[in-house]
Image (tube, rainbow, N blue to C red; front, side, top):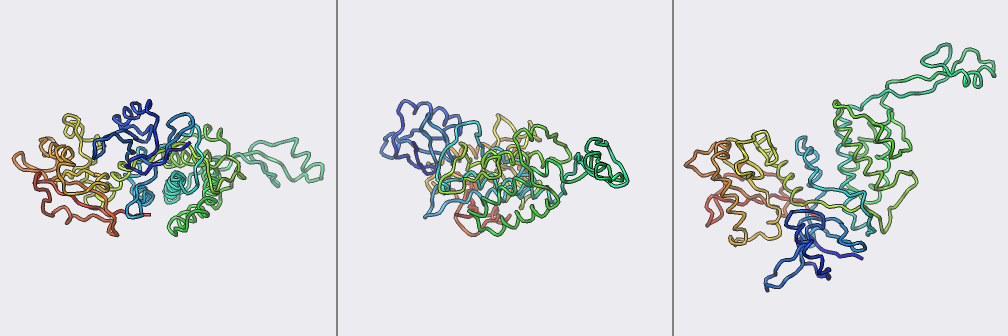
Length: 422
């Protein structure tokens, strides 16, 4: 059985009352275990069940799962794939995407309509972008053991039985069957990646006509032209030793393993149709939006931007364990990315009073003031960045010089950033 919901909306289907306390407890921990469903009071002060900002599929009970799809806005919804692609193109942000989604392969898989499969394109795009990084740096080479029937020379180990059977019985005394190693790009790591690429193409050809995605796929496969396709087993992954000189390979192989688990390890396996079976998963939309905002801010401020996850400033940035999403060193800016304002944005200050107060608190901390170049008796510029449906997708430094837009918290402004819709 299925509970269907839209992101951050009231759930109209009945929920087991005995489980509500459990759902609320996980929600308060900001856990994605049940996709953040929880009970709250509506405008009539009546208790209702509501979804949160996670999309995906998770089991609620043994035979009951919840499926949360992206929130619609005028018939469209935020393109999580477009945001994800931009994040993958940034060399710094691309390393910080582990919290944007998670897949639970060891849990019972879920049957859904292929049109409701938000996981597979997400997974494949991630894989394609990581492989693209590998191709730009150059493919890894490795030692591969081969058997070769050599003429007038020997190399490595002579296979006596095979030499006699293959050559001497036919009076070819000049030929010798040898086993030896060659240093080549046709190593097991590259074979696994190429096989996963071929598997991806079968899916992409059925769901995508995006020229950029198809171009990336062709560039990747062209780079692997000298690599053979192989039959991949799950045990193959455990025998691979990762090198610190090829860091992207580790992530690419992890994603390849996910792709094989999703589509099956057998070449003939094919589940492209009206329904598919996928593992439970979630996509954390606020976290994805925050990383998307980071990409845009880095284009404006470069290395002056310090994200909240950056521990390099240690004590100077962590008073009372308070960390805004971003600060801009020497520019007097403290920035929070608020994905939820896309749904609830209005001029009622009391609706977001807690958010404003928290951002104001960041602006009073002397450690942060020092980092952003604001004197103790001066005020920092506090900024909320929220998503907006528009063709404009870039931030400029000029946007951060606009007048304050909040009458109660006079040093806070809200700046929209355009996001693509699907």
